[in-house]
Image 1 (cartoon, one colour):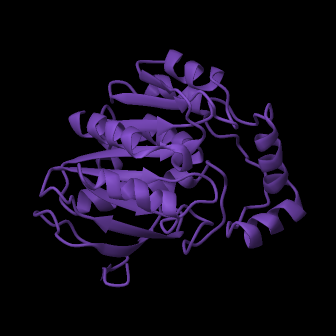
Image 2 (cartoon, helix red, strand yellow):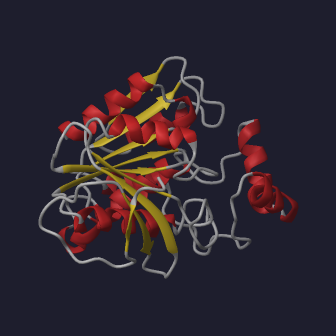
Length: 272
């Protein structure tokens, strides 16, 4: 990535789709600086850009994110970014709340690069963020055209907040809610976590789903997910128009998504 061109913090709209890999620092609506990377489609110029939202403790540099980006780039242009508090982005993680603003900044960047069709795919925490973002910025919401999206895929997402029904989620809540846990997050996982509780509690993923239509929605979940059992994707898919894929033998999020699944998701997103 060291050879990538630098993009300024703010950029004007360009009518032609921009060639070449670019790095950018994006500014969110609440003033947080977010690192982002643009990669053109390796199969040639197309009109679609895929924005990838990683899971908690991820970043643009994580191997699983780079692997997913490489697969998606065979179908469309790709934008990856690090959520606030992750990687080289500023701010602190709010674990799915204000991260919607980070995604909106990445989507606006895709639009500014000339892509007429922008779709999102999110994993775990990112899966909840793409759902909430789509509820606010889906194709039906023309008033927010800068961050409008045309299709959304949510992978390994929770349906509801504060879930502690599995051992991995109890460990995650310890990391997020305890001072010692946040130190572990900062130095062990390179994730800086905001110490304050949500106020107000944001719209939950399952509450977001009914607001997404008519934007096409795909829910993907593994039947061996150690974090969220299958009642989560079933709740999401049952809350509004959505296609549900339950993947046999799959674990959790981008680390568990193999190339074949990533290709299927990419094809679904590009086909719209």
